[in-house]
Length: 319
Image 1 (cartoon, rainbow, N blue to C red):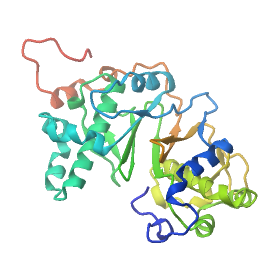
Image 2 (cartoon, one colour):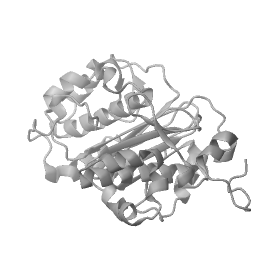
Image 3 (cartoon, one colour):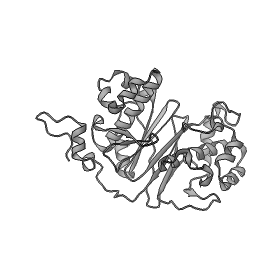
Image 4 (tube, rainbow, N blue to C red):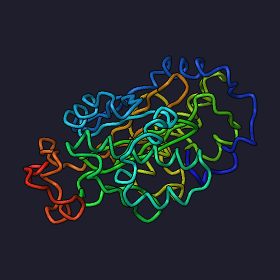
Protein backbone atom coordinates (compact mmCIF):
# COMPACT_ATOMS: atom_id res chain seq x y z
CA UNK A 1 0.00 0.00 0.00
CA UNK A 2 1.30 3.44 -0.91
CA UNK A 3 0.71 6.34 1.48
CA UNK A 4 -0.35 8.55 -1.42
CA UNK A 5 -2.70 6.05 -3.00
CA UNK A 6 -5.51 7.42 -5.17
CA UNK A 7 -9.05 7.71 -3.84
CA UNK A 8 -10.33 4.66 -5.71
CA UNK A 9 -8.27 2.41 -3.43
CA UNK A 10 -9.29 3.96 -0.14
CA UNK A 11 -11.37 1.97 2.28
CA UNK A 12 -14.30 4.40 2.03
CA UNK A 13 -14.83 3.46 -1.64
CA UNK A 14 -15.97 -0.12 -1.32
CA UNK A 15 -18.06 -2.43 -3.46
CA UNK A 16 -19.01 -6.08 -3.26
CA UNK A 17 -16.26 -7.07 -5.72
CA UNK A 18 -14.22 -8.69 -2.96
CA UNK A 19 -15.94 -9.92 0.17
CA UNK A 20 -13.90 -10.11 3.37
CA UNK A 21 -14.81 -13.79 3.60
CA UNK A 22 -13.49 -14.54 0.12
CA UNK A 23 -9.75 -14.36 0.77
CA UNK A 24 -9.40 -18.05 -0.03
CA UNK A 25 -11.24 -17.45 -3.30
CA UNK A 26 -8.83 -14.66 -4.28
CA UNK A 27 -5.81 -16.84 -3.63
CA UNK A 28 -7.45 -19.79 -5.40
CA UNK A 29 -8.06 -17.64 -8.48
CA UNK A 30 -4.43 -16.59 -8.62
CA UNK A 31 -3.27 -20.17 -8.19
CA UNK A 32 -5.63 -21.26 -10.97
CA UNK A 33 -4.18 -18.64 -13.31
CA UNK A 34 -0.58 -19.48 -12.29
CA UNK A 35 -0.29 -15.85 -11.18
CA UNK A 36 1.57 -16.63 -7.97
CA UNK A 37 5.27 -17.35 -7.73
CA UNK A 38 8.31 -15.92 -9.45
CA UNK A 39 9.56 -14.73 -12.80
CA UNK A 40 13.32 -15.02 -13.17
CA UNK A 41 15.53 -12.52 -14.98
CA UNK A 42 17.25 -13.46 -18.22
CA UNK A 43 20.33 -14.18 -16.12
CA UNK A 44 18.39 -16.79 -14.15
CA UNK A 45 17.94 -14.90 -10.89
CA UNK A 46 14.59 -15.12 -9.15
CA UNK A 47 13.12 -13.76 -5.95
CA UNK A 48 12.92 -16.45 -3.29
CA UNK A 49 9.73 -16.84 -1.22
CA UNK A 50 9.60 -14.55 1.81
CA UNK A 51 10.58 -16.12 5.12
CA UNK A 52 8.31 -15.77 8.15
CA UNK A 53 10.34 -14.48 11.10
CA UNK A 54 7.95 -14.17 14.04
CA UNK A 55 10.63 -13.22 16.60
CA UNK A 56 14.17 -11.84 16.62
CA UNK A 57 15.42 -15.16 18.03
CA UNK A 58 13.86 -17.17 15.17
CA UNK A 59 16.10 -19.04 12.74
CA UNK A 60 17.57 -16.67 10.16
CA UNK A 61 19.38 -19.37 8.19
CA UNK A 62 16.99 -19.32 5.23
CA UNK A 63 17.23 -15.53 5.00
CA UNK A 64 21.00 -15.80 4.70
CA UNK A 65 20.83 -18.73 2.26
CA UNK A 66 18.43 -16.90 -0.04
CA UNK A 67 20.75 -13.91 -0.27
CA UNK A 68 23.70 -16.13 -1.10
CA UNK A 69 21.78 -18.25 -3.62
CA UNK A 70 19.54 -15.65 -5.28
CA UNK A 71 21.19 -12.32 -4.53
CA UNK A 72 18.05 -11.14 -2.71
CA UNK A 73 16.07 -12.19 0.32
CA UNK A 74 12.78 -11.27 2.02
CA UNK A 75 11.51 -11.61 5.59
CA UNK A 76 8.08 -10.83 6.98
CA UNK A 77 6.17 -10.79 10.25
CA UNK A 78 3.36 -8.95 11.95
CA UNK A 79 4.31 -6.02 14.10
CA UNK A 80 2.39 -7.59 16.98
CA UNK A 81 4.67 -10.63 16.78
CA UNK A 82 7.63 -8.31 17.31
CA UNK A 83 5.91 -6.18 19.93
CA UNK A 84 7.36 -8.17 22.88
CA UNK A 85 10.85 -7.54 21.53
CA UNK A 86 10.16 -3.80 21.29
CA UNK A 87 8.74 -3.64 24.83
CA UNK A 88 11.22 -5.87 26.65
CA UNK A 89 14.60 -5.53 25.00
CA UNK A 90 17.21 -3.61 26.92
CA UNK A 91 18.96 -2.90 23.60
CA UNK A 92 16.21 -0.78 22.05
CA UNK A 93 18.24 2.43 22.18
CA UNK A 94 21.29 1.09 20.27
CA UNK A 95 19.04 -0.93 17.97
CA UNK A 96 17.00 2.10 16.90
CA UNK A 97 20.07 4.31 16.64
CA UNK A 98 19.24 7.46 14.69
CA UNK A 99 15.55 6.49 14.66
CA UNK A 100 15.32 6.73 18.44
CA UNK A 101 14.33 10.41 18.37
CA UNK A 102 11.49 9.72 15.93
CA UNK A 103 10.34 6.83 18.12
CA UNK A 104 10.32 9.03 21.22
CA UNK A 105 8.47 11.86 19.42
CA UNK A 106 5.63 9.58 18.32
CA UNK A 107 2.78 9.94 20.80
CA UNK A 108 0.43 7.19 19.63
CA UNK A 109 1.61 3.96 21.33
CA UNK A 110 0.50 1.67 18.50
CA UNK A 111 2.16 3.80 15.82
CA UNK A 112 5.30 4.11 17.93
CA UNK A 113 5.58 0.35 18.48
CA UNK A 114 4.80 -0.45 14.85
CA UNK A 115 7.54 1.93 13.73
CA UNK A 116 10.06 0.39 16.11
CA UNK A 117 9.12 -3.15 15.09
CA UNK A 118 9.63 -2.38 11.40
CA UNK A 119 13.06 -0.84 12.03
CA UNK A 120 14.10 -3.81 14.12
CA UNK A 121 12.98 -6.14 11.33
CA UNK A 122 15.10 -4.20 8.83
CA UNK A 123 18.15 -4.36 11.07
CA UNK A 124 17.83 -8.01 12.04
CA UNK A 125 17.17 -9.05 8.43
CA UNK A 126 20.17 -7.12 7.16
CA UNK A 127 22.29 -8.44 10.02
CA UNK A 128 21.37 -12.04 9.25
CA UNK A 129 21.96 -11.57 5.53
CA UNK A 130 25.26 -9.72 5.84
CA UNK A 131 26.79 -11.33 8.91
CA UNK A 132 27.01 -8.41 11.35
CA UNK A 133 25.39 -7.43 14.63
CA UNK A 134 22.06 -5.62 14.28
CA UNK A 135 23.33 -2.70 16.38
CA UNK A 136 26.14 -2.10 13.88
CA UNK A 137 23.72 -1.37 11.03
CA UNK A 138 22.85 2.28 10.52
CA UNK A 139 19.56 3.04 8.74
CA UNK A 140 19.40 6.29 6.80
CA UNK A 141 16.78 7.67 4.42
CA UNK A 142 16.85 8.95 0.88
CA UNK A 143 14.75 11.84 -0.35
CA UNK A 144 11.17 10.60 -0.15
CA UNK A 145 11.80 8.38 2.88
CA UNK A 146 13.25 5.25 1.24
CA UNK A 147 15.51 3.50 3.79
CA UNK A 148 19.06 2.45 3.01
CA UNK A 149 22.00 1.09 4.96
CA UNK A 150 24.58 3.78 5.51
CA UNK A 151 27.99 2.74 4.23
CA UNK A 152 26.70 -0.32 2.36
CA UNK A 153 26.24 1.08 -1.12
CA UNK A 154 25.96 -2.33 -2.80
CA UNK A 155 23.03 -3.37 -0.60
CA UNK A 156 19.48 -2.27 -1.39
CA UNK A 157 16.59 -2.30 1.08
CA UNK A 158 12.88 -2.67 0.39
CA UNK A 159 10.20 -2.12 3.03
CA UNK A 160 6.43 -2.46 2.91
CA UNK A 161 3.69 -2.66 5.49
CA UNK A 162 -0.08 -2.83 5.48
CA UNK A 163 -2.39 -3.62 8.37
CA UNK A 164 -0.36 -5.65 10.83
CA UNK A 165 2.00 -7.06 8.18
CA UNK A 166 5.53 -5.76 7.65
CA UNK A 167 8.02 -7.13 5.12
CA UNK A 168 11.67 -6.34 4.38
CA UNK A 169 13.77 -7.16 1.33
CA UNK A 170 17.57 -7.08 1.04
CA UNK A 171 19.31 -7.25 -2.34
CA UNK A 172 22.96 -7.24 -3.35
CA UNK A 173 22.29 -7.37 -7.11
CA UNK A 174 20.45 -4.10 -7.65
CA UNK A 175 17.32 -2.16 -6.76
CA UNK A 176 14.48 -3.84 -4.89
CA UNK A 177 10.91 -2.82 -4.22
CA UNK A 178 8.14 -4.51 -2.21
CA UNK A 179 4.42 -3.98 -1.86
CA UNK A 180 1.81 -5.78 0.23
CA UNK A 181 -1.98 -5.77 0.32
CA UNK A 182 -4.70 -7.70 2.07
CA UNK A 183 -6.14 -10.36 -0.21
CA UNK A 184 -9.66 -9.33 0.86
CA UNK A 185 -9.14 -5.66 0.01
CA UNK A 186 -12.27 -4.09 -1.43
CA UNK A 187 -12.12 -1.72 -4.39
CA UNK A 188 -14.06 -0.54 -7.43
CA UNK A 189 -12.95 -2.98 -10.13
CA UNK A 190 -14.08 -0.93 -13.15
CA UNK A 191 -12.58 2.31 -11.88
CA UNK A 192 -9.32 0.64 -10.92
CA UNK A 193 -9.06 -1.08 -14.31
CA UNK A 194 -9.52 2.23 -16.14
CA UNK A 195 -6.98 4.12 -14.04
CA UNK A 196 -4.15 1.58 -13.68
CA UNK A 197 -4.32 -0.93 -16.55
CA UNK A 198 -2.70 -0.76 -19.96
CA UNK A 199 -4.90 -1.56 -22.97
CA UNK A 200 -3.37 -5.04 -23.13
CA UNK A 201 -4.04 -5.70 -19.44
CA UNK A 202 -7.61 -4.42 -19.76
CA UNK A 203 -8.21 -6.76 -22.71
CA UNK A 204 -6.85 -9.74 -20.78
CA UNK A 205 -9.01 -8.87 -17.80
CA UNK A 206 -12.11 -8.58 -19.98
CA UNK A 207 -11.51 -12.12 -21.24
CA UNK A 208 -11.49 -13.54 -17.70
CA UNK A 209 -14.56 -14.67 -15.76
CA UNK A 210 -15.84 -11.81 -13.62
CA UNK A 211 -15.04 -13.55 -10.33
CA UNK A 212 -11.32 -13.78 -11.25
CA UNK A 213 -10.83 -10.13 -12.20
CA UNK A 214 -10.50 -8.61 -8.69
CA UNK A 215 -7.73 -11.05 -7.75
CA UNK A 216 -5.76 -10.27 -10.91
CA UNK A 217 -6.18 -6.53 -10.44
CA UNK A 218 -4.93 -6.78 -6.88
CA UNK A 219 -1.84 -8.67 -8.00
CA UNK A 220 -1.19 -6.18 -10.82
CA UNK A 221 -1.50 -3.30 -8.36
CA UNK A 222 1.09 -4.79 -5.98
CA UNK A 223 3.49 -5.61 -8.83
CA UNK A 224 3.28 -2.08 -10.21
CA UNK A 225 3.76 -0.59 -6.75
CA UNK A 226 6.80 -2.82 -6.14
CA UNK A 227 8.35 -1.91 -9.51
CA UNK A 228 7.90 1.84 -9.14
CA UNK A 229 9.21 1.71 -5.57
CA UNK A 230 12.31 -0.10 -6.82
CA UNK A 231 12.79 2.64 -9.41
CA UNK A 232 12.36 5.27 -6.71
CA UNK A 233 9.39 6.77 -8.60
CA UNK A 234 6.45 5.78 -6.42
CA UNK A 235 3.20 7.25 -7.74
CA UNK A 236 5.05 9.60 -10.12
CA UNK A 237 5.23 6.91 -12.84
CA UNK A 238 1.72 6.38 -14.29
CA UNK A 239 0.66 2.76 -13.98
CA UNK A 240 -0.93 2.83 -17.45
CA UNK A 241 2.49 3.29 -19.08
CA UNK A 242 3.82 -0.19 -18.28
CA UNK A 243 2.22 -3.53 -17.71
CA UNK A 244 2.50 -7.19 -16.75
CA UNK A 245 0.95 -10.36 -18.06
CA UNK A 246 -1.96 -11.57 -15.97
CA UNK A 247 -0.18 -14.89 -15.60
CA UNK A 248 3.54 -15.16 -14.94
CA UNK A 249 5.46 -12.85 -17.24
CA UNK A 250 7.87 -9.97 -17.25
CA UNK A 251 7.40 -6.31 -18.08
CA UNK A 252 5.07 -5.47 -20.96
CA UNK A 253 4.53 -2.39 -23.08
CA UNK A 254 1.02 -0.87 -23.05
CA UNK A 255 0.14 -2.88 -26.17
CA UNK A 256 1.27 -6.13 -24.54
CA UNK A 257 4.67 -6.66 -26.19
CA UNK A 258 7.65 -7.75 -24.08
CA UNK A 259 9.38 -4.61 -22.82
CA UNK A 260 13.06 -4.00 -22.43
CA UNK A 261 13.96 -4.90 -18.89
CA UNK A 262 14.75 -8.61 -18.84
CA UNK A 263 17.13 -7.89 -15.98
CA UNK A 264 14.12 -7.58 -13.65
CA UNK A 265 12.73 -10.43 -11.58
CA UNK A 266 9.19 -10.29 -10.19
CA UNK A 267 7.31 -12.36 -7.65
CA UNK A 268 3.96 -12.48 -5.87
CA UNK A 269 3.46 -14.66 -2.81
CA UNK A 270 0.58 -15.19 -0.37
CA UNK A 271 1.55 -14.97 3.30
CA UNK A 272 -0.31 -15.61 6.54
CA UNK A 273 -3.30 -16.78 4.53
CA UNK A 274 -4.59 -13.22 4.06
CA UNK A 275 -1.92 -11.01 2.44
CA UNK A 276 -0.12 -10.76 -0.88
CA UNK A 277 3.50 -9.62 -1.10
CA UNK A 278 4.91 -8.64 -4.49
CA UNK A 279 8.58 -7.94 -5.15
CA UNK A 280 10.55 -6.39 -8.00
CA UNK A 281 14.28 -7.07 -7.99
CA UNK A 282 16.81 -5.67 -10.46
CA UNK A 283 19.89 -7.58 -11.59
CA UNK A 284 22.45 -4.88 -12.31
CA UNK A 285 25.07 -7.43 -13.34
CA UNK A 286 27.01 -7.26 -10.09
CA UNK A 287 29.22 -10.23 -9.33
CA UNK A 288 26.85 -12.91 -7.98
CA UNK A 289 29.75 -14.63 -6.26
CA UNK A 290 30.80 -11.52 -4.36
CA UNK A 291 31.33 -11.85 -0.64
CA UNK A 292 28.33 -10.44 1.17
CA UNK A 293 29.95 -10.24 4.57
CA UNK A 294 29.74 -6.69 5.77
CA UNK A 295 33.49 -6.49 6.20
CA UNK A 296 34.04 -6.56 2.45
CA UNK A 297 31.67 -3.67 1.74
CA UNK A 298 31.81 -1.35 4.72
CA UNK A 299 34.43 1.35 4.98
CA UNK A 300 36.70 0.70 7.98
CA UNK A 301 36.47 4.30 9.20
CA UNK A 302 32.69 4.25 9.06
CA UNK A 303 32.53 0.99 10.99
CA UNK A 304 34.79 2.48 13.64
CA UNK A 305 32.54 5.52 13.93
CA UNK A 306 29.44 3.35 14.26
CA UNK A 307 30.75 0.92 16.87
CA UNK A 308 32.68 1.47 20.10
CA UNK A 309 36.29 0.27 20.06
CA UNK A 310 36.83 -3.19 21.56
CA UNK A 311 38.41 -3.47 24.99
CA UNK A 312 41.29 -5.93 24.59
CA UNK A 313 39.01 -8.14 22.48
CA UNK A 314 39.55 -9.13 18.85
CA UNK A 315 37.36 -7.24 16.38
CA UNK A 316 33.91 -8.72 15.87
CA UNK A 317 34.16 -8.27 12.10
CA UNK A 318 37.21 -9.30 10.11
CA UNK A 319 37.82 -6.46 7.65
